[in-house]
Image (tube, rainbow, N blue to C red; front, side, top):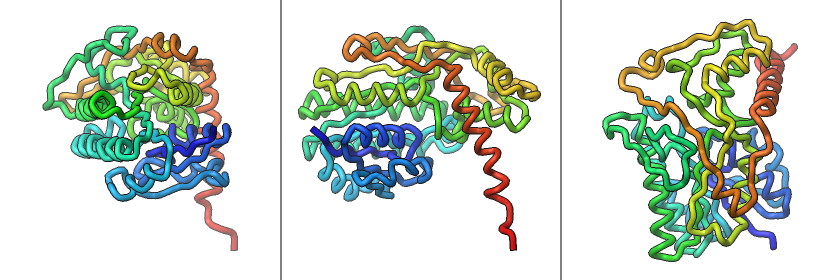
Length: 335
């Protein structure tokens, strides 16, 4: 049976792809976004659908959230203040926005008995660089004085809200921890490494690798992530649970830069920039971030289907298209 989904952060990178997938299968979508990081052009496809509605507004606006949750059947909470640079420059914003906003969304979902999917992050494992990380792996806490951990602390509190509302008040909630989602429409802003390195390469700029480049990550295509979200949304046994969502194709950031350089044929050099120079003194990072997705696979059969080479091909094509279009977009009109 078709349902109406409220997606907070609906004009964002992941939210816009999820909206298209829900519409394609016959559901209706209401997207709430304040456009601080989301972009209206991300909704170029969904925006023309008769079962789609966009509302510009904030998850901090309790009246707006209450009204929209009441109108919908399911809530997918993706809205968050994100990005490494933001965490360093303005740590208070992601901390307060994420906690207060999530509480407002979850409280409204409880008030109207709506299922809610909470998007969390691999950051909740903090300095735990072991792997593969399972859902009950212990976080290794960093100092509260380090701004880097404001986001992970806020998302951990968001998870606690989802779990406790489920256990104490019966809220049908599900938590997913996303590990480095990438793909079309991801902005190079806010510290997102693949779109940043790709755009540097196609522009023949130096590919800047922060740290020593030996830190490793796994990158999962946004379409695979959306498939996972749909599966847990549709699976009654997922309620009350938490699931890692990510790829297990591990690569160092220096290796990533080298692969992008080769794939683009770029003459650009790779420049290693110490963390202290990039982010200032005291910056902390994780050496490794490798998920176990066995729990999700056992319940739903989900496995990622797109590898890093495919991700890079798409991102490179998108960056080249932007570069071709940019002169036309910025050139003065002919008299």
